[in-house]
Length: 115
Image 1 (cartoon, rainbow, N blue to C red):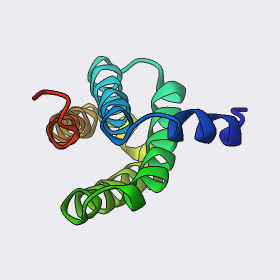
Image 2: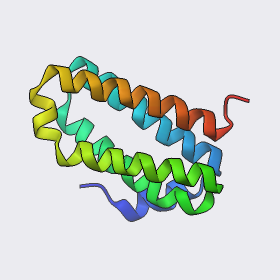
Image 3: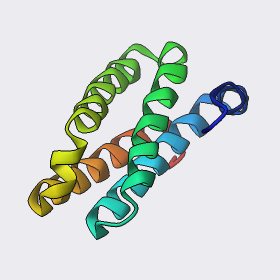
Image 4: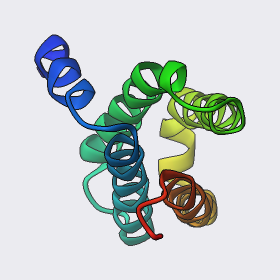
C-alpha cells in the first residue's frame, strides 16, 4: 500500500507545470498498458493515483485547466467503477487506451512544458 501522504508532499513540492506533466505521464502509461492488455493492477493503481494528482492540483490551476481536470476526474472515476468490465472486453480496453492518450496530450499541452 502506498503512503499517500508522502506521495502528496512529494507531488506538491513540484511546480504546477511539472505536476501536470506527471499526470500526463500517468495517462500515457495507462494508454500503453491498457492497449497491450498487461498489468491490470498497475493500471488500476495509476487510475487511482491520477485521481489524487488531480485532487492535489486543481486548486492551483487556472479556471480553464481546473475545469478540464474536473472533467478528467469524472472520466477516471467512471473507468475505475467499470474497470472489471472494461478489462474483460478488448474493444473497451482499446477505447480507454485511445481516451487516455487524448487526455495525456491535453494535459501535457495545458502544462506548458511543450513551450
